[in-house]
Image (cartoon, rainbow, N blue to C red):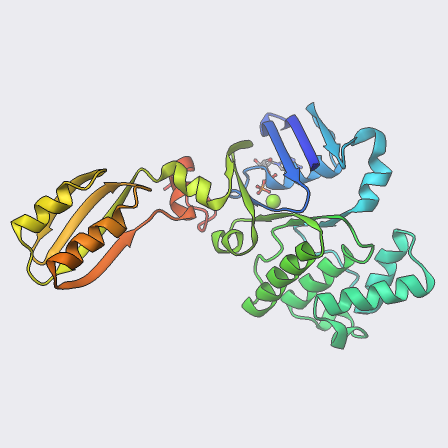
Length: 315
Ligand code: ADP
Ligand code: MG
């Protein structure tokens, strides 16, 4: 079942088309990585999903229900970690969580135990009675995440939660995301860090200029652009006979010799690395092997002409 379905969403800010017919489903139990450069519409998409902005066209369903008709119920079952950190600087970590839990109607012993559990989940149990004014950026972010979790949402939405924080907190957040997902929480994880998508996402959606331009598992996305692979074999004694054998492998397009290195261009996914290796081994004296496969970064670059890391400017 889909936890959320955005159907042909259009959102304009004046003349800016922030969402251009976005159609997207988020499946129950998945960690969906939403990836795109700055200004591509990620935050707008999230706001449309949770009903924080009015859309110009389209329809949103969450938990199988029409969003507009069920907004109160839907908001109760969602946790939202916004792009900007919003915590009360002069309340302690525990008081922050008590406040947010209270908004969702938790009280008494239940509130107390949810707050304790959530502090532990984000690794702030030792800081519970300190005010976030003394926290590092990463600790503040973890508190901010905890605020979105106290009421035990089924569906957690995180908008670039690791921008500008220390690696230790970043790893902690990624681990928290995995743990929540193991416990059954569906997660929409927005980022422009490819490594994070690779580390946590079960499926990826790439947005650019307000449009969904690709979606699938990482392997599927890489497969889309992976037409060829390049295999470099270094051998002790390259012979014409070996080159001929390599050329005869099905799917191999080109075999070139440069000194002791044999460069093979092959159709991707043909299993030709294994075949080339066994041919070279039979010939004896295989010194080294190098195979280059496209990465998610290459997928992004191929599809958008932009790099993610530098904030998405055209190359
Ligand atoms: P992202 O989160 O991927 O960086 P946003 O959803 O914030 O992208 O922005 C998408 C586009 O909409 C951008 O061109 C941005 O400038 C524009 N935009 C976002 N919010 C507003 C707003 N409140 N008013 C006007 N334009 C906006
Ligand atoms: Mg954003």
